[in-house]
Structure formats: structure tokens, C-alpha cells
Image (tube, rainbow, N blue to C red; front, side):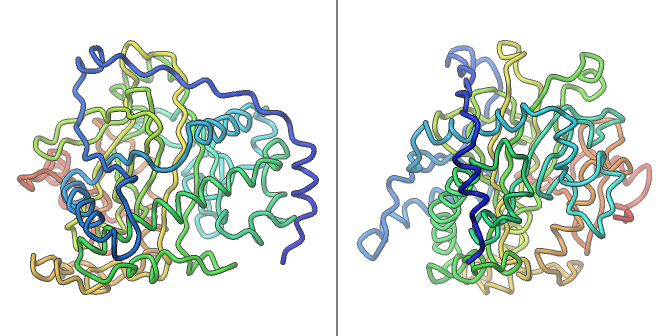
Length: 430
């Protein structure tokens, strides 16, 4: 057992929290004036364990399959967390973001900008533990106005709450690390586990396969455990000039390198995904005290492309919510990083029957290889300093680092235009 004396001391000395005031959601009649997407919504209170609950789980799995195989996004309601739990984590994030910049730079996740990172030593601001400062990423020659703080290893108490683990974080948040750990542990053991079991039903493999083999937690072994990292994220208003240059895109269109991503539903109408039927950008609607879940690249590749890791972005809030504070809690869920992310790994009868196999051009890679190399591209000048919302298309290990999923499988205009001007998707030194 690791020494946790410092953590216990910090708990006794912690600064009181000021309650985070979440913005009010738009009235339904106003929200209806904006293009929103009607996501599949799963009621997790209908999930029942054991043989007696199998039919209910099958019914949820049918709903989930519709979401995973089309938009790749869905809502989860009745997740078993009280509103006060969500708001306590937001309040901790508010406290953490309040410290002076000169203190924040002592706890950076990486360098001050993405292009300055030494990726041989650092996971960078995207995935490393600590602060990603504003202006870290570039989008069409505009530096971002987003600040976030990442937590890692919270599924491993002997690492996260050890004296060494506690000292990695600013003093102001050390006394609240158990709250952070409890929240993300709940998401992992309750939410992620149930999504994995429902996905097993979809894939026609024994329930428990995904969880037991790729998401279980091995004490003090984060590399071979399911896990990933949690993020507290605040968006600041960019200048009007920068909004024009980026076409009001606060966070450029991208897919997640994770296995799945779990985030809190946000009352500010700002998150957008591409409509599966039309390819148009549409806002994700808000459901109070619920979660929004999306497929990441790892799950798409493991399913051979049956499940969709869809392009999404954060757009400038709608007019009625300009100036409100957009704060987000996100869990980027990674599997065992040695997992080979090809459909042959799980040998799913469903995927075999539907013809989802590893394409010839895909190299055999692990999740860790994909996640590491894709993570190096996010915010990189050579990829992102282009006009329009889509980055330069890059091929990694025979796979496009971003993929568009519309029902007609048409090439997205950005890829077609890029090929016309510059040839096929490029290889960029990551």
C-alpha cells in the first residue's frame, strides 16, 4: 500500500468550494429554432443484471446498436448519479481554473503549444496529466481559447492518492482528489461496464468479453488496464476577429482517439455532430443530469467500421447563450493499450455475417500505437492551419486519422478537394 498521509493532510486543509452555477438551458420553443439532432436515448434504469434481466438488456442493446452503427452518439439517462454529484465536480473544476497563470504553468500537461512538444517524453496537452493552457492548439492560424486539466490513474488508488501522485496536482485541488476518483470510478465500473456488456450482445459474443478482456482494471498496471483519462474543460470566448477566421468553430471537427468518450450533457447549445443522413452540422440537444456518449476510433476499428467514430466539433454558442460559461466534464475511455484494434481480435459472429473485416490496407496495430500517433496530430500546424473546418487528411498505419460517416458513404468534400490539389492523403511526421 502506498503512503497516503499527504492526501489525508490535504483533505483537512482544503479550500471550501463555491458552487458552480450552471447556465439555464434554452426554453424548448427557442431550442427548436436551431438545427438539432435527435440522438438515441437509453434509459439506464432499464438495465438489469443477471439472467432475469437478459431480455431488458437485449432491448437496450437493440437501441444501442442503432446509435453505434449510425451517428456513433447517444444519450444516457437515469445513470445513477444525483445532480449534486455532477455539480460538485464542476465546482472542483471551477476552483482549479481559478488559480493564477503563474501557478498553472508549474502543472502543465506538456509544453505551451502543441508544436513545441517533445512527444518522445510527453503525452502532451491532449492526454498528459495537468493543464493544457489556452493558445496550445492552432486552427486556421488562430490559437484556441480553451483551457483544460487532465487527470490520469484515478482507477489506481495506490498511484493516484500516493504522496507522489498527490504532489503532481496543484495544492488547491489535492484535498478533492477522492471526489475526482469517485466520479470517474463510477463512470468506469457502472457506465462503461454496462455499455461493454450491451455491445457484447450486439456483437453476439459472450457478455463480459469486452469488459473482462480489455476494460478490467489490474491494480497498479495502467498500461494493461482499462482507464484513460478524465478532463475538466472550460471554454473562454474568443475575440470577434478570431470567430470570423474560424467560422465560429471553437474546437475543430474531429473524432476521438479513445475507445469511447463519456461527457456530461451541457445546457449550452454548442456541441455539434454531422447528421448521419445528410452530413450537415447539427447541435446535440441537452438532457439535464444525463450523459452523452460517443464511439472513439478504437471501438470503430475493433468493429471493422460497423460502429462509427463520428466527426464532432464545438461551435460558438447560439445567440441566446453568448457569454455563458461552457464547462465540460469528459472521460476519455481507453482499453488495455496492448489491444490489437482489428475485428479479428474479437471474432464477432455479427461482424463476420455482415462482412466487416480488416481492410487490406490497415496495418496490424495496437490501441496504444493509434492513440499515441493520432494524439500528436491534434492542433499541429501542418494539419490544422487550413481554410475551412476540416483538417488536412493524414493516413496513419493505412487508416485515415479522421473519417466521415454519412449514409451514402460519399467522400467528404474536404478529402476530395485535398486530393484534387495535393494528391492522396498525406503522411506527416508526427
